[in-house]
Image (tube, rainbow, N blue to C red):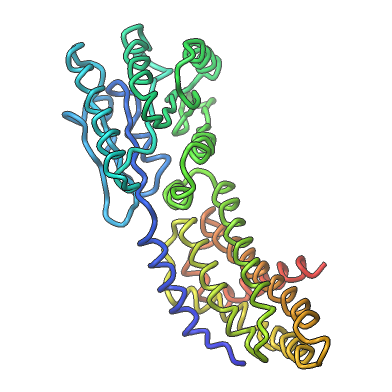
Length: 379
């Protein structure tokens, strides 16, 4: 059976578009004093450059919803705490109003899924008693609705000061998920010392633990700080595809296995692409498919034919043939998925550009990666 790489590539494009269209929207409320680094935090965690950096000045009047076409994310930015007591109370009421409206809608795309409360560790923006009282009031009001609240310590440098602030908040025993110190960007102190960014990957891990399953792919699609989280999520996509492909290996229809496998592998590629949040085009996918499935086609189909011949032998047929074909299908699907993750990782880390993969050298690299993964799975 000949593999039509152009058709499969188009199927992948269609599946990717469908997957992206069906991602649920993640809605986050971001709270904190003006100038604590909310915009920098948002832009450092998520792709899409959502928030304009305020440079220490208020950039919102009232709660502001920030969205961009093509990104399944909405940020609700609140006014800073340089407000009067009455206005602070109003902000809390507005937050709870948004939460309750979302719950009443029974639509996950309209619900508030998480609150980041940002406290600046560095500079002169201290965490005072009034702010603590407000945070306690918010957590008390949220007990019935149980929206995860994460306290994010921004500009958390030096780490000793951040640890002290973390301990101070934790002693209050507030109804929050975690206190997470982060340094969103490298911080220069002088020509000889630079504090490196840290903590954003930890924030994503905690978000992942707090969010429902329906939002896991959305979170990974949007975040740009944790390669490991993307790879772990992609491994789950592979595991699901392998389970499906093994089942397809038991199909009692002679010579049908290769055709049945294609939709499973297309869905797997679409799922991994969505998790990495990368734009891929048909040329890229055609190159990947021809360098992997296209090249290995004769070997794969050879094993499939043997399996189908066994299926036709009375008394041996389905079970024995299925065992061989299922194993082969699982090996192929796993190797294909691992190779695709490896390519995504190269692009994510900047070691390769997507356009590099259109070249003969790029196709050869993809072919070698797939062969390496296939050999690993055969051991």
